[in-house]
Length: 412
Image 1 (cartoon, helix red, strand yellow):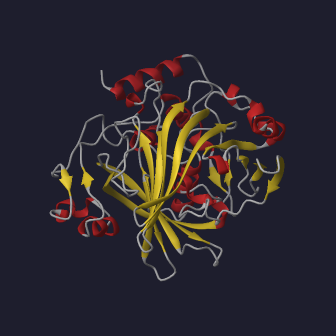
Image 2: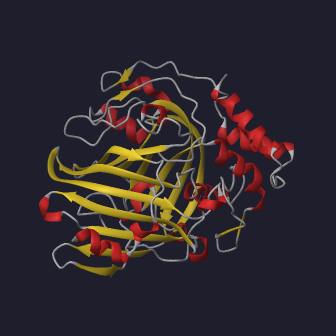
């Protein structure tokens, strides 16, 4: 039985249990959901590509690489290993939530979202719709994500290929609203979409530096963030600045996962659909990088992408714009191209999602599994990377982890 057939049986079983009436019940709406989540019809597909695309044969990529990345291959900075497209739909629960609730979603005049419950807000993105960009931005904000995930990893900063900083850390991301299982909506009364916890583990000079951050579901809310200093053994509240660089690296606060800033702070434009090569659904427990670089060596595959342009409303923002390559099936962005004020592509942000079947302890998952990210500044030669060594998604994270008192307790 194909994975898609199995999803169909699960969805049918969910419907047979007599749940709430499905809002998107007409045939056209169902077709839109199917096109959104099953663009490959359960079959592996591959363009006529060599196993490796390098400076010696960079033209072989044709239109399957953005011109900006093809230039990096041509220059010898990047090599791309290829493999067939894999069919990796999100979880059955997320797809079923989309069927039930997507018909309730609409955009307000100010671009905000109304009527969202769970699932993908807008499964159909129409190029003729003037609101297509904003709708895709909201889809990106509400991906198919685990209720909680714990990760142990390493963050490295490189300058011209030389590592200048390495930090080991523990990171937790937990959602508390818009869960497919409403029993997991633990922070709904407080209006908190998700919470994050970060703890530096090594080296000694940053050990036990900790932060907690709360993201409001209301996009007009500002993140709440607290930091614990091991030097003073005190907690202070921070004013989060999305445009601020993380630990002096090339990553901004809003660069994680391709874009984790405020929807309201940008103008959004849908640039169309395109099939391109991307490192998505990595068939490994960990992402690997080429020596002394932040470029991945894992295989890339042809994926159907939705191109989304984000232009900051703040003219002082360091980016003129970014273009997110959003995977049509999974709803995540494996890479983002960043442009400077002169319109030149100068930075690429990669986010790596693994195939859970290759990740020990997470084989039962049926959703994108974040396993790392990296950023390359093509002008300065500086880069940074995150590589996760272990991920736990089965255990529910306690609310106490995200308390200010707990920061002090852990720091002792």
